Length: 125
Image (tube, rainbow, N blue to C red; front, side):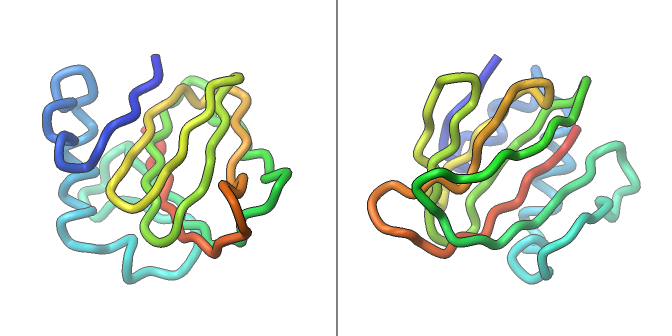
């Protein structure tokens, strides 16, 4: 299952994805906005981890890596990028999120028009 929506509706997905409550807590404190690129545990010590990336989009993008048996929620914090999940393509800009299976082949950082610097957070749960 792939979910593509705006952050204003994030809370409505807590039924099928209870981990979103932890993600909302992290985002409400602006932690990913203020942290440097890297891997982080949530302060709540839950099973939710997150990765912050900064990159320059390109025409070919880059492979995301697999997170077998997990789900991934990607949120663009600054800029924009195109994400390809198993032949479905999504344009992510600030205020949008994408949830997909960590078992899927994902290509990230694809540029929409011109190369753009972007910062994104991926929550793994």
